[in-house]
Length: 88
Image: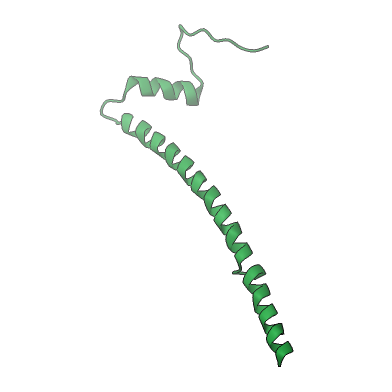
C-alpha cells in the first residue's frame, strides 16, 4: 500500500511539473506573454502613426506636409531643390 501511494504521488508530482498544464509550461507561457506584450505595444504605436496620417489626409483639405512626407517615403520622390547623396 505504501509503494502504491508513493507511486501515485510521484506520478502526479511529475505531471504537475512537466505535464501539459504543468509549472514548466506555465513559465514558458509567461515568457511568451511578455514577448507578445512588447509586440502588441510596437504594433499599437505603428497603428497610431497610421491613424494620424490617415486623419491628416482627409479628402476635404489634405495637409501638404503629410502628402510630401508620404511621397518621399513611400514613392521615393524628391524635391527638385534637394541634394541627393549616393554611395558608390
